[in-house]
Length: 94
Image 1: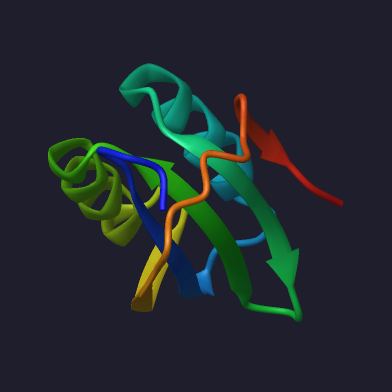
Image 2: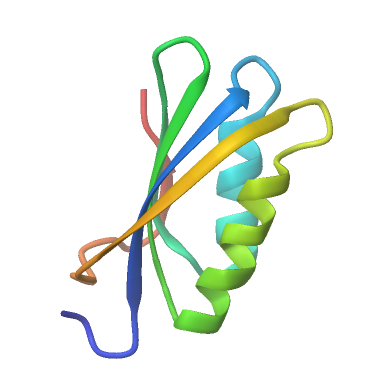
Protein backbone atom coordinates (compact mmCIF):
# COMPACT_ATOMS: atom_id res chain seq x y z
CA UNK A 1 0.00 0.00 0.00
CA UNK A 2 1.25 3.44 -0.89
CA UNK A 3 1.35 5.57 2.27
CA UNK A 4 -1.32 8.28 2.41
CA UNK A 5 -3.18 7.13 -0.70
CA UNK A 6 -6.46 5.32 -1.18
CA UNK A 7 -7.50 3.48 -4.32
CA UNK A 8 -10.99 3.01 -5.73
CA UNK A 9 -12.17 0.86 -8.63
CA UNK A 10 -15.20 2.75 -9.87
CA UNK A 11 -17.97 1.72 -12.24
CA UNK A 12 -20.29 4.46 -13.51
CA UNK A 13 -23.41 3.53 -15.46
CA UNK A 14 -25.87 5.71 -17.37
CA UNK A 15 -25.53 8.17 -20.24
CA UNK A 16 -21.75 8.24 -19.93
CA UNK A 17 -20.56 7.66 -23.50
CA UNK A 18 -20.59 10.29 -26.23
CA UNK A 19 -21.00 13.04 -23.62
CA UNK A 20 -17.36 13.71 -22.73
CA UNK A 21 -17.36 11.66 -19.52
CA UNK A 22 -13.80 10.36 -19.95
CA UNK A 23 -12.49 13.88 -20.62
CA UNK A 24 -14.50 15.16 -17.63
CA UNK A 25 -12.98 12.45 -15.44
CA UNK A 26 -9.46 13.27 -16.64
CA UNK A 27 -9.93 17.03 -16.20
CA UNK A 28 -11.36 16.56 -12.70
CA UNK A 29 -8.63 14.11 -11.71
CA UNK A 30 -5.86 16.38 -12.97
CA UNK A 31 -7.26 19.37 -11.07
CA UNK A 32 -7.60 17.35 -7.85
CA UNK A 33 -4.24 15.53 -8.13
CA UNK A 34 -5.86 12.12 -8.65
CA UNK A 35 -3.91 9.51 -10.63
CA UNK A 36 -5.16 6.45 -12.52
CA UNK A 37 -7.22 5.90 -15.64
CA UNK A 38 -10.70 5.85 -17.18
CA UNK A 39 -12.14 3.83 -20.08
CA UNK A 40 -15.46 3.02 -21.74
CA UNK A 41 -16.89 -0.44 -21.09
CA UNK A 42 -19.85 -1.78 -23.04
CA UNK A 43 -22.59 0.58 -24.16
CA UNK A 44 -23.47 2.53 -21.02
CA UNK A 45 -20.63 2.05 -18.54
CA UNK A 46 -17.32 3.70 -17.68
CA UNK A 47 -14.60 2.06 -15.57
CA UNK A 48 -12.21 4.14 -13.47
CA UNK A 49 -9.23 3.19 -11.32
CA UNK A 50 -8.15 6.13 -9.18
CA UNK A 51 -5.65 6.85 -6.42
CA UNK A 52 -5.53 9.95 -4.22
CA UNK A 53 -5.40 11.21 -0.66
CA UNK A 54 -8.58 10.20 1.23
CA UNK A 55 -10.23 13.64 1.28
CA UNK A 56 -9.39 14.24 -2.36
CA UNK A 57 -10.87 10.86 -3.29
CA UNK A 58 -14.17 11.83 -1.68
CA UNK A 59 -14.29 15.00 -3.80
CA UNK A 60 -13.43 13.01 -6.93
CA UNK A 61 -16.13 10.42 -6.21
CA UNK A 62 -18.74 13.14 -5.69
CA UNK A 63 -17.87 14.67 -9.06
CA UNK A 64 -18.00 11.29 -10.82
CA UNK A 65 -21.45 10.69 -9.31
CA UNK A 66 -22.64 13.94 -10.94
CA UNK A 67 -20.84 13.51 -14.26
CA UNK A 68 -20.54 16.10 -17.03
CA UNK A 69 -23.45 18.40 -17.84
CA UNK A 70 -24.52 16.43 -20.95
CA UNK A 71 -24.31 13.07 -19.19
CA UNK A 72 -26.52 11.26 -16.72
CA UNK A 73 -25.26 8.95 -13.99
CA UNK A 74 -27.79 6.26 -13.09
CA UNK A 75 -25.55 4.21 -10.79
CA UNK A 76 -22.04 4.28 -9.39
CA UNK A 77 -20.13 1.63 -7.47
CA UNK A 78 -16.72 2.34 -5.91
CA UNK A 79 -14.83 -0.64 -4.51
CA UNK A 80 -11.89 -0.07 -2.18
CA UNK A 81 -8.58 -1.58 -3.28
CA UNK A 82 -5.00 -1.37 -2.02
CA UNK A 83 -3.18 1.72 -3.31
CA UNK A 84 0.03 0.95 -5.19
CA UNK A 85 1.28 4.37 -6.29
CA UNK A 86 1.84 2.94 -9.77
CA UNK A 87 0.37 5.89 -11.68
CA UNK A 88 2.11 9.17 -12.54
CA UNK A 89 -0.96 10.84 -14.03
CA UNK A 90 -4.59 10.20 -15.00
CA UNK A 91 -5.01 8.67 -18.47
CA UNK A 92 -7.87 8.02 -20.84
CA UNK A 93 -7.62 4.45 -22.09
CA UNK A 94 -9.06 3.12 -25.32
